[in-house]
Length: 321
Image (cartoon, rainbow, N blue to C red; front, side, top):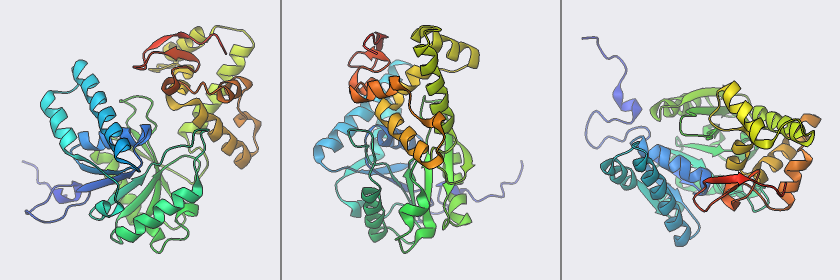
């Protein structure tokens, strides 16, 4: 039998009872759609997760949504009842940042504003509060694509432990994690996050600090071009999506993907990238602005490029575009 040379305790397993292991507990601040996905994914990977919300009602809503997603997975033969119970047993919701004190990795994932914007000042406040309760070697991350981690961490004492990560969660098989090392981030912290990616069975991709990273810069340009094709009446919305899925081997069409991501988030992201790069390819199409101004944001509002029922099932094309 081959000798195992790498210590297993580095991957969340302890060689003796009572010894604190790396990634023994993960924290998430904000349990909206993206936060829930991260909590769910991490708990299913066998890690304990504590998430912070602003009210008991939001905590219960988050737990209910996570349980519902697990039930859906059971219905599709992707999970057993015992696995669901084990997953839910690893998840704790809290109103108190002090409950994160034993976490060695905390991900900021606060909600977007109603118009799709995310406050840098509010995120900085989250980072400040995290630094007050976490051990100096605990990693602090933001799950964002347009906010520069060096800016968020600039006022912290231990700014070297901050990174930016992004889960491009278009579907459950998109197991890739973009990791951004800031100006102050140490190589040791970067290695920890790479190990975390492997632990949750994601492929780590290192990306330099930039607005939109790689995944969203690719996505918004394709979406803009699809909108131009639609405006030129070259093909129907459904047929454009059909070509995108069949020719390029994608699970979702580009318009479906936009509805899943949230039109309001995409438009604000594109505005950020246009300001950052000054390239008109990032300027949102008039169709996107029409949906944005009419608050037809996609799946969560039950109307975007398509219309949806209360479960998120697609019913047909939105003829109000």
